[in-house]
Image (cartoon, protein in one colour):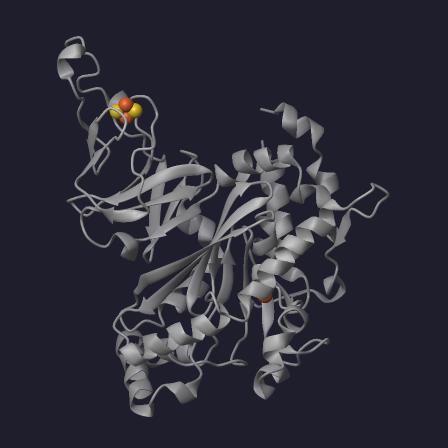
Length: 429
Ligand code: FES
Ligand code: FE
């Protein structure tokens, strides 16, 4: 059914193939509609199963503007539930993560097991016999759908619609290649950095697969290193096999091909001893076979964005969490390749720190741009300057052998792919 909001905002007009209107970054009504149409209908990444590895483990997360508690029960099953006590609505679990068989509400002491079932109300004698006795209405409310793929836990607030795997679609082979760097095919989240961005959530979304900015915003770090500069510090298109790909459903990838090859899953060769690297490569061959291992080892690590909130880089996952139209939480999860030599994982961590950690030299540049970009877009007098340009490379966009729109990494293919899907979502009834 058409809502009032839908009638007033014409997304066909605001989001075009080669441009987008700045209003989509600051309009409160548009933000509310995004929550309805995107965040409450898409598969949204919620957590990784290694964060709740043992029975009883839990994490709390804001997902699609809903505080969730995500648990693993004694049978090993994962539950994603609204972190809200059904008695009078208090936030039930107040910690980021931990292990608990029972949650006890701090307000009036009701208790629930880690599957969300009400175990007991306090001062029972005060309740009429039979009232809500076995009633499910007094259990925690589960998110309608939860599915996992290779350890990535996604939730969907809409009870109907395509499955997770259908929605991931063409992103699956890239996601597989990302995780297949691990000798066991699994990864373990080991830490998180949290930051708050004073900008709309679509800023980091668009920036994630944007090579155009790298030679400018990150010029400082590339200038320190001759090799990096060759690859990155270019105002023209890099002459390489690297491409950006529209994977459909808003998912995008920057595929460096064999252009920038890193070993140990994102570590330049010199820091890992030869024999450690050889054993790592052999471990991939044992699990994936020669061809499968080569697909991982001879290609750069996938650099991809799973719409709307999961960004996968070489050594960390980034999660985009909208909090308001101008406030976004941006979390970085560092992970180990399970079963890899500690020297490899340590080198990956060091590399992460240099780029993205609190003292890192890459991410801070981006954060500054997000905030400045938001401020710039909001500085308007309404004389037509509100349109933002997305046309780079439009005239030379092509399709790859899989029929996916593709082109050079500095072309705005990924941005157009995101906005195309965004418009589909926002105009859907
Ligand atoms: Fe939780 Fe009252 S609000 S026990
Ligand atoms: Fe950047």
